[in-house]
Length: 324
Image (cartoon, rainbow, N blue to C red; front, side, top):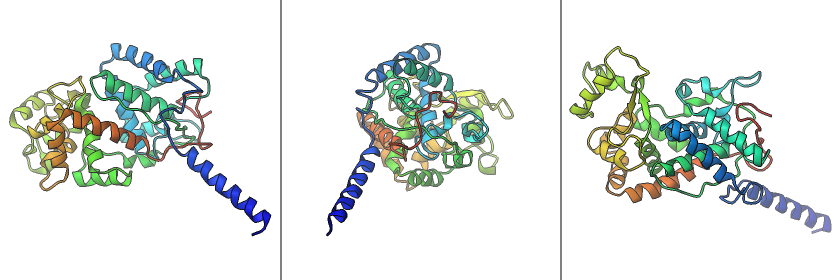
């Protein structure tokens, strides 16, 4: 082989290695460029939680909905602009919230580490900190994502819907590279937060056109929900996703499913769908909070690894609501 060929081969090999290294997220990504990133994020979200007990559930939902559309690239955070048809306007995202807190975190980080920390990483960090703050597990968030320069409103059909069957939800998780264990573990985030009546009222009165309620609902729980969501009432009224410990992050969500007290159809179907592989996973997590916590942490990392932009792809937005 000629000297030129050896040099060319070496360049190609170096490029491949560099490309692969750029694609890897790391918990130490900001250790030198913004070593106080976690502390800054924590300071902002702790203050936010004093004013809004639901902020943890809101921000982790933003993280979920962002990652399921083109990966975890903060595309959901973009507002409408000349070349941006915001994902916020799509039906699955009309009830997402918490964006001003993300903006506050970004402002605080721009003051200490301008142009360094991506909005995508901010959402991932805030989600972990708020889960931990509410009694849940902690994990080393993998960092190094960059922000998308585009939005994909049409792609929001990939976001799981509370009106879908277990088979439909499972396919969406599989399409995102996640398995049944990830599905059940990540659904466990419904151990805190609220849902609008419009997302589950179909279970209370005329389920699947039968004229009867969903048979997988506990009858006492059904009557409680009917008082909260009367037929023909305000679909925007909120109900606790976890009726037992609505503001804490624990494994009660899974014991609720065992007791036929899953609020959303997609919650209860994890346990009530005959023959589903998710049933044994629900039982596992109901029997062991530590097992749930360990698995949830791993599944959050798995979800956070969905097609991140790294290296020179995308950008680091100075304002999470718009491209630079």
